[in-house]
Length: 459
Ligand code: UGA
Image (cartoon, rainbow, N blue to C red):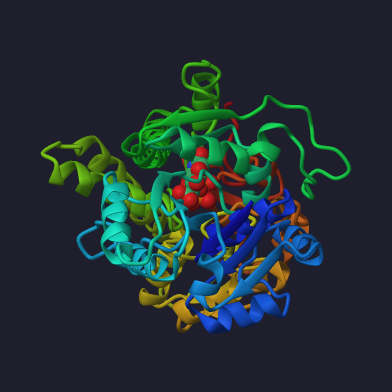
């Protein structure tokens, strides 16, 4: 099928590349000519594991092209995916101006029937507004429009695998023709007929995705409801961690046992620095505002947000307590991205932690395997060092802020020798406390017994 993808951010690029790799003809467009220039030169503007391979392969097969001219993408397309950003306004509501703008561009460039699919995360009832805008602005051009909602559940860092192996494909439609068209678009994924670069040479056997047909309003709600529930699980685990600290429990033991109940499940129960990134925090805010606008008091989610914000205060307090005086101390920071396997630092808890320490007069030396360049403009006054051992050299404390696999595998004996004071504050519970104690570290984490080299182990 001929598809247009509007918006070449991470969702648009993953969607366009994977759909092209699965056999569709995709023309992707973005209003940023620099971004399109990069893509046409074969360079990716974001770091997403596996995306380079899919994109290269789809471009080589002649099925993926990029243009900065929106009309060039829209005019020949049978179906158009809207993947533009919906960032938060001051009020917390989603800013839908990019969707509105794109609707007018689609209306102006369309001369044949189009299926217009919302993939951007939008509040319920955006579909109706979109349909209205398409009809009024496109009324004299002879085109007809059908609207659908197809929320994405891609996680940054594993988005390519998520696209090829979704647990569910949700399509919110108003007519059988749109449903059939979307089923056709996703046929390769439903039938497992694609070349997946993540699991070469063979994908593991797994259940086929559920193709879920709903109303447009339900599909829009499903996305916000899913992300909000994930945030709720994380904040719940964080409160359990607080209780464990007070009562001498171990949060890992508690959440493991809780998660073994299939009604609860083991995922998103990792306590730590809280959730960040461009999705969970903004979607929860938008959901609260949407509820408020419609007379529903979703105070449950307000509490989720409040618990999450407190994590930064609590962590900085842990650092203060451990260091006694922060001013003029050298603090090493490992991890800046909001989670591992991405260079995304938007709403990253690590960035906020570093800002606070800088404000208190610490000398901060920070590192991240891929996010340093994106973090640099946000952290005036911090030094950036690629080598983790150099970060530890002469430091009074080492903070673990993002759980990159490579940090688990560091030579901790060497780190011990490098540091002026062997103090670790682990915001992600990455390291085994008993082992760190054995190595001689003073080691603090969340929701687990604090151990120093002199503590008697009573586990
Ligand atoms: C999230 C959702 O997981 C995706 O399903 C959704 O498609 C996406 O938002 C989106 O709306 O586009 P993402 O933002 O990539 O994906 O990141 P997550 O993996 O959800 O992690 C979010 C934050 O929660 C990270 O800061 C992570 O460190 C934190 N987290 C996650 C925890 O603190 N504990 C956990 O147990 C899990």
